[in-house]
Length: 616
Image (cartoon, rainbow, N blue to C red; front, side, top):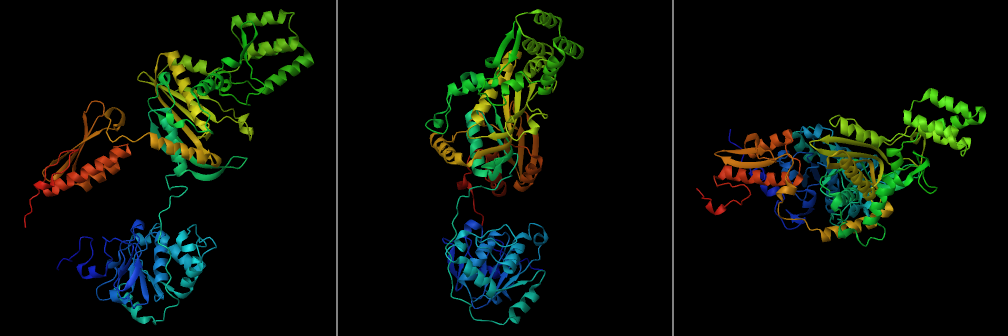
């Protein structure tokens, strides 16, 4: 059997003259007597034009049309094109409106992809359009798909309604070439149903929300404010609009997002110049330090209510929760305080003393203080009870216990601070802590810390919150003899309020103008933490070696063609940085050219095509 001759694009040679040229200057072209719209930006590149007089168009599903039609029947169709995604419905309608002599649309589906869930989406939307029509906003009824605005505005919906009512849609799934031939000769030709209509050409418009993985997006940066800016940019670009919490405030939100700050030196901390001048963003080094001293550390609230007895006392204007209190003085149950004061009122001070001694044990030095309190004639009974409660049932200093564990059992994975009280915070709709959990690990002389935030205002709250945590991490490291490691912020609901979007966008624009990306690769700062790659060409195969980034020890070797190595890289998940993957992809492509041509390949150097010798 003679092998089928194909063009460079894989088109049978005898059908090449019917296929829209891949290389062209315009998207709207006249081809074989028909004016057709084939927008390259929408990957509409595989259209064929047969006979301009035909009133039948063919959709070939996920299959290239030249695999469905033949030289014998191509001229029975006016246009033949695939419909792989819902976006293609826009292209289809544009061409039907421009060519109203087309009265019949046959949908052929015969490939394996056509039978998959993803492969059936576009066909299902197309059938819904013909069955259910459009709503007033251009959305196909029964679906979530909306046509492009160029088709909908300025009376476009009425034109589309005319197309749907005048063009017959046929499901020709599984039909062979003979069946297609029967279709083309069995339909009665009719005159055009309207004058040709030309919709505006499609434009690429930046959407309010780009598609994304939607959850667990990761940001890694060296410095705190670079991490914040990258996080802001992710939410502006990928955050989904939603109503937040009970009040229903509108936000853009990322779910369960994570930021890793890798190397911030809090002792030499400075604010970047691009945050200056934003009226809505009142951040200064002084305000950040104030936040740490007054919202994270407990000292401003610790009052000596009796010699050697301290109590955490919040001011009258303080919020209903303070991170410093939840970490350094986690409150005892309010029910206990009410019960103890009820016993005082009903049975007197001796009954309170007996109740506390029978249920709580305290150290001898505190017991001696309790005796002094009971004998102190300068205190009334309610004041004595207040001091006794602090002695017998003090609030929990989680940080002190954590420091003790870091000093005595640094390797154990039990270094946690829990800031959420289910019995209290779980019953409220308001005034609940956003920071709910802090975890630390001491590894290789460094103290890594993760913070988990239930609800997180990234535009205005994140800088203060994470600076406070950065300072706390440094404070804990100093107390226990460790160096600071990574700081991780995991935000269950990372959001920007819609009324903050304009200034946040302006801030990101200013940063982009002031901080130009470096075109020089910085080994110490930009290397992939998973390894370096060495690529060579050995005869007819590419050799890919992964090295340890710290000492260049070879870790893994792969051999084969470009596709062989690419498939292995995809399954092994060896690299982590997107820029590294792009670079390695380009190097592998160069290596493949070298493998096929015999030209010398040197990693990170251009191929010298002048050395290519043509052998005719």
